[in-house]
Length: 284
Image (tube, rainbow, N blue to C red; front, side, top):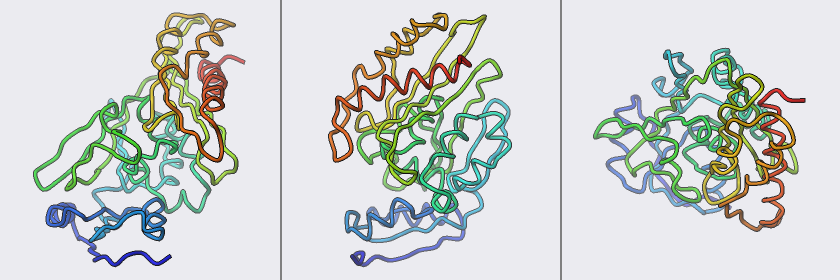
């Protein structure tokens, strides 16, 4: 199908891009295009203007900023996976990003574009949510920061305002006593996750001092498995961990589609959470 007609703008600066968005409330940002272009072809999106930010250097790169790592929105998935800074200080991000689609898409798709698309079946939203990341957005009115817990509003809907561009994401460094793992179940390498689990576990003297668990595709937005997180706190590794992970699906509302029914997704959430937590905790 041929997309509907639209104007195309390629700004030379971030300020120019913000002005272009401010002048047209129906404009959309074009980053890597891996999410937006299929929507245009299917006529599920009707932007009057595409603002191409692909050549803006201010939106690219991985930067070590002391207590956190800043990942520019236009940094490709492949660049994130290959970044020594990300692998060293944000290993959960590297693990999950390496599972996104296939190499061709990882070379074109962008870290910020995937997050701004706000698809609950995407791998990265649950990861950033579990790590308590902070989104940095810019508009003609200035810059603001949005905690991950406030960024994802509904299915394919974020809290970015109409004239805002996602500049990048701050990922806190958690330290050497944390372990990480991303576990997902999907039909093929290119397919969306039927369910995914991002786990960060802080270990102390053979026990779990703290756990953070993000769930992929278990509702209209990425979710935290709060009941399991609370149950795991202070727990020694063993059979009790499995019991705590039985609460992983509590409060979720997974969708029914051609690939899975809600009950099956709830079952997967429990199983994958147990695997992810045990691996992150370093337990065989």
